[in-house]
Length: 429
Ligand SMILES: [Zn+2]
Ligand SMILES: [Zn+2]
Image 1: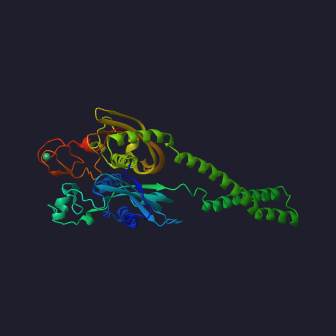
Image 2 (image 1 turned 90 degrees about the vertical axis):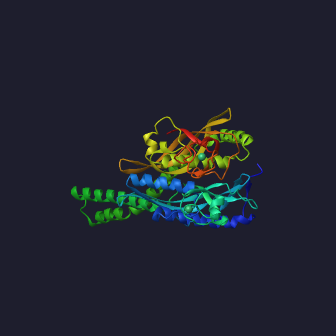
Image 3 (image 1 turned 180 degrees about the vertical axis):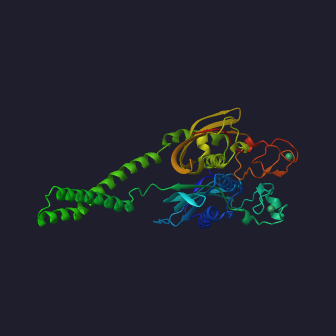
């Protein structure tokens, strides 16, 4: 794959991309805490965030997520790229300390405070390359569907003029994940020791009481003995406490290792699928497909009514258990099966996620396995600049928002969404 490369500081954009990454992390915190629209987010990313906010509001929930400097800052920010003929996508990831709080009418019902990471996929035109003025794009100011050329000469709706570097780069996708590195939580060690010390003290006190009841506590000496046993509880307390802490954490680390390895067996099939697709569509890459499928999953989960989205072409009802989900953390995904027939590709995937479910007034964190089937007509190479929020009608070349309507509002012809975008044909859990 010639379009694909690694870069670590030797690329002139690398440093700049890392700065954008930090800015976006701040913008995302501001979005979740103050509702301020993240300026760097693409219109599709904003749409997904907006859907999630609407869903939370409809359930009477308020979710705040904050990204801070990680506890142990290893200072490394990874940058990886993939591109098509016009755009380059940068995958940028780094450690963050993440706090999540969910409240229901001012009452906190969930909180999590953990080390983790944020990964963003940021798009920029290729060096020396200029996207066509016909490139469909939403106005960053008013959100109206338009084209790059029109936005540069002034949005038809709000009159704002944009320079190329105000329109790019933009964040196409983002993932939040939680670390499983610091499994042996030393903060808990103290709790275990205190717990076991109290337990042994209680035994000492009970034995002292029983001794006094049976009249064995006759001498000053035996009283001293019992008192010493009570005070001495700290020693077996520390021993048993530390032992129990170690056992519990060892079991937890094994469970988490297993959890992180979920879906590993699908790696081969995913690679075969992506190679096959790459021969049919040179822009197609495993990174592109992971990011795209994850974004479609988010749209399906965060929408109050996924069936009103044009990307949703499911015949079955969306299962209730999926509709409870208000936030997801990505672990892994992989291809289960695929078929490419008559220029139509059907692919089924499994996502391994940790999701926050809102059920019976409570937020429950569950490890889920979500199956999703996608379909696309393979006619032309993937356009990385494609946005469902601003498409150009092939019949009358007008721009419109195809997120919820299939028919061009100007000429009435049906927009061929499946030629440009993957659609969801089935989802289950
Ligand atoms: Zn505008
Ligand atoms: Zn039209």
